[in-house]
Image 1: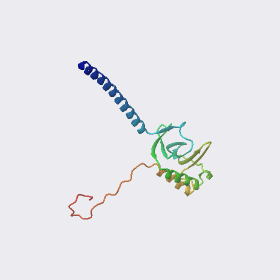
Image 2: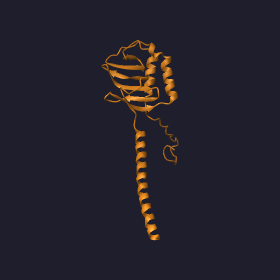
Image 3: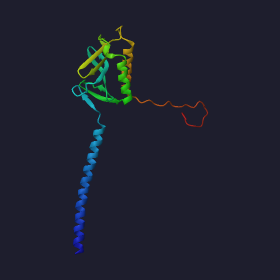
Image 4: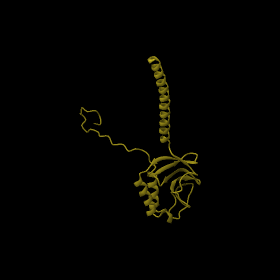
Length: 182
């Protein structure tokens, strides 16, 4: 009698352990899938990119060769080589985005009427819902306001993704017993 109950108990435990193993495998698979999804780089196509944005970059012969966009949510996007989609290259802090768009408003970007592209040119396009205002100029254009070139340079700085490194301290004592740089 006890042997039959013991065999029945072992059989039940064995079935539960296989169910638990299947459940554990399923949970691990779900976590792995969620982890991989969170590491994906956001990208937008021309149809899915939000309308409120600043686009800027360099162009040649009427086509952009180096293009970026900054969205109001802080994403800095770079246009890929096929020019049909934008990939996120950086994310700005909320304060940086607010300051950038306040700078844009302070120079009154929409008040400029400057469209003089040449063979090689720079451009800024402000796109909002229902409107698009494009400015383009080359190095040879003589009437480009300094505030506009400053704003363009400021936009380009937002695309830099390099991390700043600390300078290495070098010992001035040539006869030091410590290793170099300490």
